[in-house]
Length: 234
Image 1 (cartoon, rainbow, N blue to C red):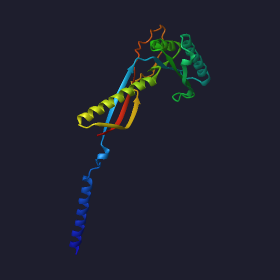
Image 2: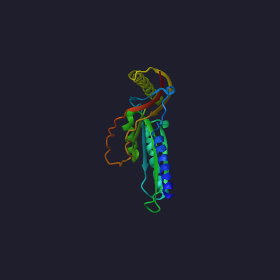
Image 3: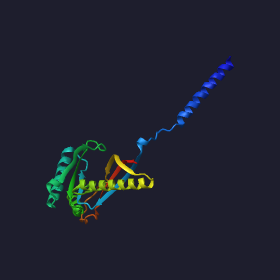
Image 4: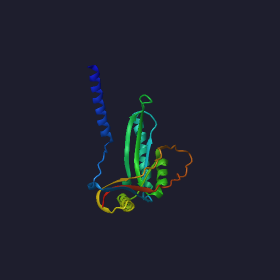
């Protein structure tokens, strides 16, 4: 009797295993004439000379009591902004980024004042503007964002190039596969700005003899578009 039960269990196990093997071997995607499509992905990029330089400048005070540090920081803050305006930077191009008086936890009962701005100027005056700020008291500066006046136009150019390339690639692929390209079924796009390594904030100390401005070479501005398109094939 026990042997008969054992044979029955083994037969049932074999049956389940066989069914599972058949399920795994079945195709996951069913190809039909109704979903004859061709998919392409294409990229397009545009590069232009920068028209605007956005400088990130700021300063940190030495640790001290809150009242004296605030007074010292206020003098430095006004000196930097005044120097920038005297250098021809419009008030509308100077924007506060952050400012705070905070406890210096490495030293008991001591405080530090930190303030940062963004300053917009031309690429040709980037080095000069940075030099003006450092001479006036900026001690934490160096990051520069390069851009153009009309970023949307640059993005449209990149998207147009990606779209054109997607259509060309689809036509070439259809011809190579011996089919005729049909109507566009679906399309999506993504825009991106290629990342460049940004310089870390540099602590700049003032010396007795004024140093010449840094040699700064503007970076080109780039935009990249990716287009994903699905076409019907006939």
